[in-house]
Length: 290
Image (cartoon, rainbow, N blue to C red; front, side, top):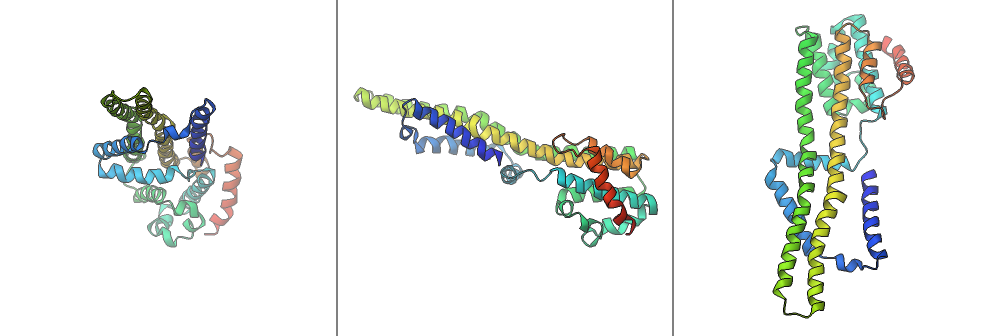
């Protein structure tokens, strides 16, 4: 939940500094300025994006407020699962895993890896390409090309929300200026009023510029950034599967194939060679009995 902590720090730094300088927070409370800026930004966001992008953005916002599901634990499960499947196929033939990939819900192998099993995207990608491998009609080069196309398409879709939010962040300062200009127009219309009233109207107008910039760089831009990182995490897990399966198709044993997959992971979640080896060693005995 670092994003919530970051928002709190931004609010505390800006609000606290303003109060420390002698300002009054009440002067910043301009609900109609916020409505003008936020409503315009939301309207422009809806107008600029397709229903699919709006739906993906809503889903991504939920993911952004939670920790990434693609941590070391799920990768350890994924690579252990791939080892078990590939080792079984190597020892008993590719057709020996057909029943498991055709009905993963009742598979004794998949049931031992719940984190992987509940991730629909991982399961679809892994099972689809294991099914293609068992068909024996495509070369490793053809499967690699197909994987690249699918991953590129998936990456494009997952990046739509971050691009859309970045556009909103870029536009918020401009909407703040719009709010400020409208406030100045209101102040000029009251030019015959005493200086104290004019000063109050002008200060309220400046709040619009302040809100636009603060919302942009303090809140929406960081949100777009974290949504983009979540997309990178979701793509990386597919790349891990791709590299592992292709290494196996090119003749490398399962133990070495999963090492290929380990190498493509981000350093923060990549298990060490010894960690992965020990984890895989623990799966060998159960795998042999299946």
